[in-house]
Length: 362
Ligand SMILES: C[S@@+](CC[C@H](N)C(=O)[O-])C[C@H]1O[C@@H](n2cnc3c(N)ncnc32)[C@H](O)[C@@H]1O
Image (cartoon, rainbow, N blue to C red; front, side, top):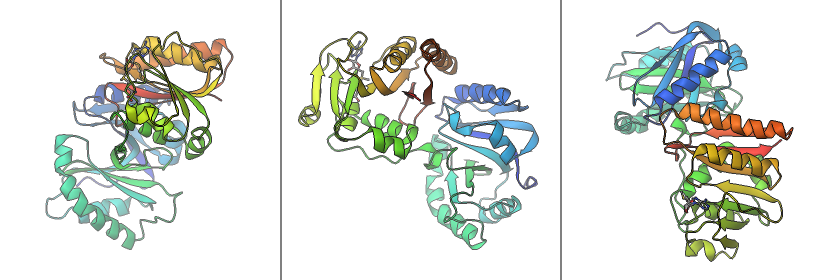
C-alpha cells in the first residue's frame, strides 16, 4: 500500500470519460491545467475510460478549486481532485485498507461515490460494487466520516480503476456529476419515438440548473426543433407543454403529432426563420460542426430564440480542437454583437461522436 497523502492535499485531477475519448479528455485537461498554471503530467491509457493529471507538487484542495474549475471540462463525465491511491488492494479484504486510507485523509464527506471505468473490465466489477457499496457506506458512517445531512461537505470518490487499484478523490456536488460515473439513470419514455430523446433529457438535467428548467421549460412557451424527425427531442418539449415547430423533411412520429402541440414544416433548417422570437431552439441536424456553431450563434445573437440546446457532431480525430474551433466561432459572433452569453458544453453519457451545448444570452 502506498503511504496516504498528507491531509487536505490534492495530488492530481481524475477525469472519467467515454472509453475511446481519453486523448480528447487528456488534451483538454492539460490545456486547462496550463491555463491554471498547474505543473504536472498527464497519464492516460487507451480505452481505459479515464485520464489523470498528476501534479508535480501537492496543492491544498481549496487552492486547487480556486484555480481549476472541474465543472467546465467537456470530455469529462465525472471529475474529482485526486487525494490518494492504493495500488495493491487484497482480494479478500478491501474494506480495511480503504478505510485506513480514507481515515488518513482527515476529511468528512457528504456522499460516497463508488465508481469504476465504463469499460467491459469495469462492468465486471459491478456485482462486487453492489455488495461492497453498502459495507463501505456503513463503515464510513460508523466512523463518523460520512455525513449525508451535510451537503456542504465534499463528496468522496472511490474509483476502482481495476480490482486491485483504488483512486481516492473528492469533489463538491457543484463540480462533478450528481450521478456515479456520470451515468444518468433515465428511463426510456413509453411514447417517445427515438432513443435520442434521452440525449435531450440528459442535456436538460445536466446542463441547466433546476431553476433554469422550471423557468424556461413550461407550458405555453414556444420552441423550434431543427432536424426534428422522428421526434425524440420534440417529445421532451411537448411533454413539458411547450408548442413546437418541427423542421425536417422526414416524418414526425404519430405519438408526437397526437399531442396537438406540433407544427411540422418540411423546410431547410439552415434558412428557415420564425416570424416571432421563440424561447427555445434545439438542433440535432447531422452537419459539420463549423456550419452548426455559427447558425446557433446567429439564432441567439439575433434574438430569434432566447436559448438553445444543440449537438456538435464530431466524427473527426481531433475532437477537442474542433470543439474549441466552434467555441471561437460562437464567441466571434457574440462579441460582434457585444452580447454577453453563457455557453456550456458537455460530452454527455448519451452522446457518442458528438457533444451537446447550451447557449443563451446572459
Ligand atoms: C439525428 S436526426 C434527428 C433526430 C431527432 N433529434 C430525434 O430525437 O428524433 C437528424 C435529422 O436532421 C435532419 N436534417 C439534416 N439536415 C437538415 C436540414 N438542412 N434541414 C432540416 N433538417 C435536416 C435529417 O432529416 C434528420 O431527420
